[in-house]
Amino acid sequence: MSDFRDWINSLPIFTRYWLLSTIGLSLIGRFGIISPEWLILHYDSLIHKFEIWRTITSLLWYPLTQGTGFHFMINCFFLYRYSLKLEQEEFIGRPADYFFMLIFNWMCCVVIGLILNVPLLMDPMVISVLYIWCQLNQDVIVSFWFGTKFKAMYLPWVLCAFNLILSGNGVLELIGILVGNLYFFLKFKYPQEYDGPELLRTPKFLEYYFPVQRTNIGGFSRANVESRTQPQFGSNIFGGHNWGRGQVLGQ
Image 1 (cartoon, rainbow, N blue to C red):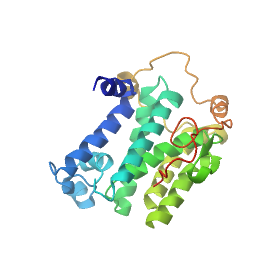
Image 2: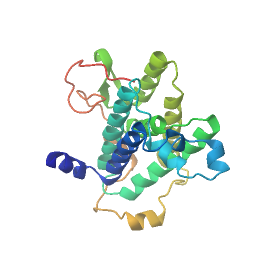
Image 3: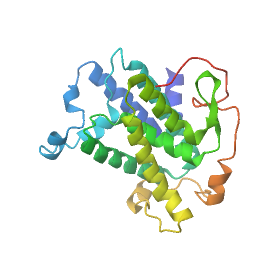
Image 4: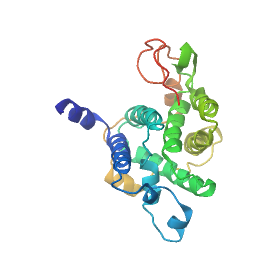
């Protein structure tokens, strides 16, 4: 128990609370403590009854059944892995910037979810974070099922294709890719490649509550981004060393 507590406490703040809230609320819904009908994103309930909590619970809650349990665990792993990597690497020492990224992605997911009548936002939110990491590490070589290797920039599309093949629906992954691409374009590509203004500035009040934690942070200059996108062989989508083919862990 002490080791588990130490591991939880070692996680950066936003990855920790996002992961714990997702697991906790999903278990609460699984055991019927709260009716799932109160947790999903529903247009009439949100707009006409102003049940604003649905914008948050639809992100954190996932229906746990025998048929969805494995998919939920994979989503939790992707959440943990890629949120952790972004928060501890690309956004290291700048919690306000990372929190603002999560807020932006969350708001986009809510708006698209309302338009397309998507009741659950866990999948697109996780994919949006994964997509941003993949774009910031485009040329890192990752391994997928059956020993296939490709650049990280293709990983979100591979996951979308596999989900389309296995379940016949890749809409949630496409929403996540759209949201992640929107953030990446506005935050990095537009100001760096098109010499446009920085449209996504972290609000000052977030910087006040979550100040920079260390000095001499490299930030997201073109040189720093390019230095993180050099090919790195031997890694896989589940992190760490490529231990071989292993078990199928796709969606």
